[in-house]
Image (cartoon, rainbow, N blue to C red; front, side, top):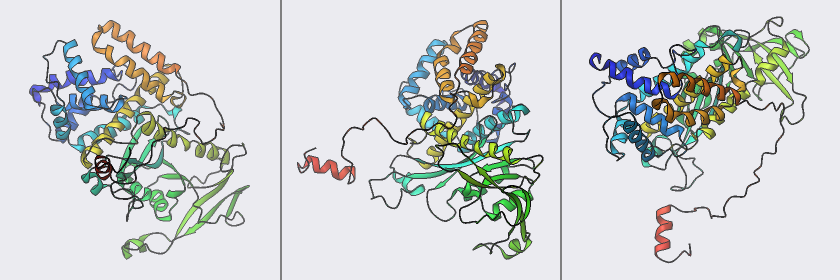
Length: 468
């Protein structure tokens, strides 16, 4: 490792330049040389004198998930152009070497890079970006699909209502976002269905992320007595929507204001499979503040929301404060949209479960690096980072990428300044309470749906029994 430290630092600088990272600028400690060296050592990787080192492989994987094409051929062509432009020897134009290098990357290494990048970004955010100076973590879940390969089907089976050969493997994912800067702090993945395969189960696997003083912001699916009690025991506050199965009666409890009170939630029956001693050790009561938030603007699907929180001081946390905070939970939906639609993570492309997870984590790494550029622009131009367009920032980074290694240090500073100026100009439109029909105007092409496995349909065409 020591003999190749200079080589690693040089290659890491290439990666950092692609995302405008500099030690002299705010958030310059994101993806630092010391961090990458530590993670490489922990993963047991060695930096040999080869084309596809771990750093170069990660950089190419990032290029691949951020580009619109997503193909291995395009990213290898890009590497050939990069090596020629920087005076390095040429390498094979075939994609086999790159694909093998991706397989050699440990999943734990890519995941650690993504996590640490997001967490370092959040640690570096100024207090004025935070809600009342608190770290608010927003939890939400979604799904991703992947190619219909046998290994993927075994690990992440398709939905049971789909016929064999006509569906795609599907996985459930859940992410914890930083409300202040939008970074993904951690992510979990599981099957779409089955025992323990739920957003609540995924949240339990992410407990270690939360520290005393944090605030968890989530929807009604997280409103579980056991989970809320565990959060409270660890000093983590929560603001969650009350589950529809729980009745809210503001005539009971300690009244704090209109439709605002503190009540006791009794301990429910022991969960199936839960250790009796563990159950007995839990308190019998959970004190929860229930608040009804009224959204009076037209266009909102829900006009009244019952919210449960551990923030019980009405002077420090007014009803209006909680209304404003819970409405910001929608940012998690927008962040997932940035990942799944803007970065096209909704349909993954790798054909084995391990590679699918690596691809997923590489998307998260790229997303966090784009968020870092947005944070730099927001800091320099005194903007809240949530006012900057994620898609605009991503388009700018892609447009500027080819020129970082072709300019002098003096021009590099000007290029960096111009990138941040452009990113800061890409503002999210002020569209409060925007109303749009949930429908598409453009008509799709009139192709028939595949109703039998492709091999059978192809054989039918060859046999002349199908006109198409």
